[in-house]
Amino acid sequence: MITDTGKRKRRLALTVAALAAILAASVLLDLSWAANPLPLREVFNALIGRGTWASDIIVNTINAPRVTFGLFVGAALGVTGGVMQAVFRNPLASPYLLGLSSGASLGAAIAIMFSIPFIPLAVTKPALAFAFCLGTMLLVYMLSRAGGNVRTETLILAGVAVSSLISAAVSFLTYIAPSEKMGDIVFWSMGSLSKVTWEEMAFAIPVIVVGIVVMLAQSKNLNAMMLGDSHAMDLGVDVRKVRLFLLIVSSLVVAAAVAFVGAIGFIGLVIPHIFRLLLGPDNRVILPLSAFGGAAFILLCDYVAHMVAPLYGVMPIGVVTAFIGAPFFIYLLSRKRSEVGW
Image (tube, rainbow, N blue to C red; front, side, top):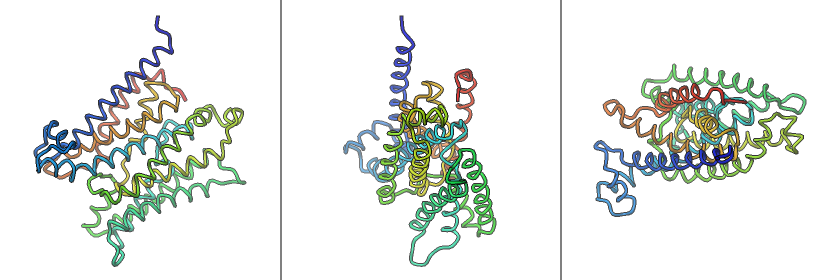
């Protein structure tokens, strides 16, 4: 007779195996993209140095930077989404709950609108997006402080208010922008992996990796915080310090991720929920799986974004994540609604 513990372990093993297969398939598919997609055997040969001249350029020069950074961006958004949902004990929480995407969009819009002489846009746009993303988090935190304390509800409300204000500023800049710059602002706000370079990754990936490791190390504290602040404190967790620490780390990771690719939504909201519905609420399991699940999901969406409308160019990846993620999430939620608990 199989016990409940045995069933959970079996379900976890099956989930990990399926996730590994999906991740491998998504990497190979996205690496195969071209005007005439490469067979997967040619992709594999190019990766091990046995491909043709053409397949080597397509796989290793054109597609590899996009796919590599997509892995890290998807992992970053998946983990930070799970952390935000646990910190705020809110199933609607996402990496952009505190207005981080709006802040990054404003920084990018300013860089696009007001070019700085002798400094290329490829430098100013991610730099301002990163700075404004972090600045938004600090502003929200300062506005929510009252008597030296920061309540979760106040933090969320401050984030919503600041995000709305910044979104209005981005909309205004989009409205007054010349037509050629308007398109750049709109496209950046929807997200794309297409223009990232190895040099940009050299800055962003270390921040993302260190941040993810730090957040994973806080899984036990997050489990305690999901029980409520008072219960967490009874278990020895300094809730105020842990919450502030995780907000800072999450903001750094999100800023590093979106600064170069734009605000890609929905991943941090959906991916942690999928594993939570399948495997339960333990963040020691949910957060690592959310990293790999986010990576696989963003690459699948990137592949679809390239293939779905070739006559119109590459579709913004944020559109695809919503089109694919939302219906699947609704289906899964309707099948497992009795198991959802917060």
